[in-house]
Amino acid sequence: MTDIALPTRQDRERPAGPLPQSRRGLPRWLVGAVFPVAAIVLWESGARAGVISSRLIPPPSEIASTIADLAAAGELLGHLLSTTGRVLAGFALGAMVGTVLGAATGVSSRFGALFDPSLQALRNIPSIAWTPLFILWFGIFETSKVLMIALGVFFPVYLTFSGAIASVDRKLVEVGRVHGLSRAGLIRRILFPASLPTYVIGLRNGLGLGWMFVVAAEFLGASRGLGYLLVDGQQTGRPAVIIAAIVLFAVLGKFTDRLLTGVGTRFTRWQDGFAGRAGA
Amino acid sequence: MIHLRDVAKRFPNGLLAVSDVDLTVEASEIVAVIGPSGCGKSTVLRLIAGLETATAGTVEVAGHQVVGPDRSVGLVFQEPRLMPWLTVAQNVAFGLEDRDRKRAVVNEAIERVGLGPFSHCLPKELSGGMAQRTAIARALVTKPPVLLLDEPFSSLDAFTRVDLQDHLLDVWDWYRPTTFLVTHDIDEALTLADRVVVFGGTPGVVRAELTLDLPRPRDRTARDFHVLQDRARAELGSSRVGA
Image (tube, rainbow over all chains, first blue to last red; front, side, top):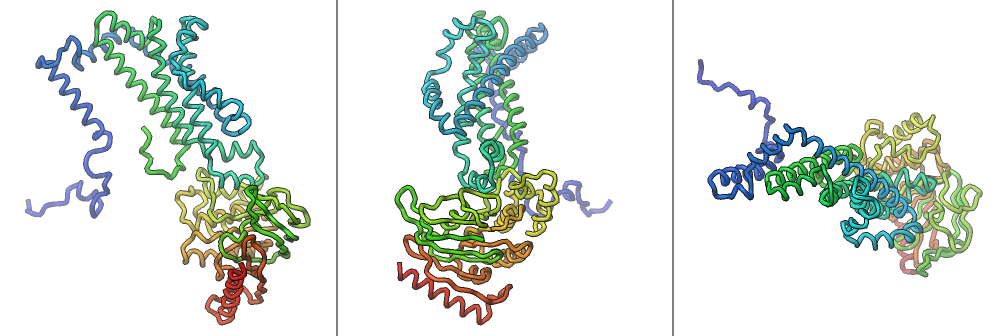
């Protein structure tokens, strides 16, 4: 053995000079996990030490075991599927109508003059206020729930898409005119692609509201779903069930949003904005 | 090729941008219009492009009255105005319809402006000069008989500008389109044009015309070039006083 220190593997792989800022230290996802992990650890140890009343605020371990029990009893999948199914159905419907009407009012000023004022007026009604009426009209089962969610999804999608189209750079539209594009060509080749990034944001907002509205819908009479779990947990005095449902909402919401941004980024990679990290 | 007779343009807000404009550009001629900003020279270009409608007089391109944008006219704006979601090749192909011939035609135009290796780049990956070359290729891909350039190099740095001016002449040599160039850069006009039209006043009117019989490419440092610079400056100066 000699005293000469051989270069380690790390040394060789490291490029010369200082590392770029983003490479230094912990990876991004790990930095983001610091706070939640710390909170969970404090919460758990606080409950075990008796500082936190675990009857009202059950520790994370109990919530995890509640979720495991629900899964073992075969209940969990049913709850997840019915809630997710409602959100997806409502989202599909609301986003579709929002897209069509948003496109129409954004593209055609005449159509916009006709419909936009009415839609803006309706928008000012808190959508949940429609719930009793929807239940009277469509019954207490799936139809009214899906329609409630669709209503919640509709407005952000409609407003964002319509606004995005209306604010497409006039200079690009002029390029279309110079190249003799028809109205349909202008819409397809300039207006839609240019408003796509904003449209994706509208869809994400819509999806977020969809998850909000599914809770409201499931509060008002459901025999399955995460919203039902919330009510059930309250009525049977089991806060662990309530928090378990909240956690599952968070996971599902994040997951679907991630899916949507994943698809969205594929189509908006051309954007030249401040880093690509505004999303997710 | 381009004929303007007694043309005037008054905007809806009452502003009279240009009046009594008589202007002719012969086939394959390069005519540059210079003048201070706000003299209506861009308005004249937009009238020829069919983006604005004259309120008096007639504007004709290739024997037809201009009623709107036409595919026989290619236009390069001050900014590249590329579609940010399309690659260089897709941007160049933007004005084409004939799907079968697309690739070959697009490639030829891209090669002409020297962007062959960059045809798959997005606009955000291009320098200002490269973006403007792409815009030139897009305007010329259909080989329109008329090419309009609206201060095409004014937002570029001095080096790139001179470079692109020389480059434009190479591209022009491809099929020698009738070219109408609006600029506020005297040297640019003198480097490129067969004829320089000096614009001035409010509303803008034609103040003077200089015919340049120097062969191209022109040496910007040659004595003859300096003589022309002085004449053009004198005309521009008098146009300002006249206003």
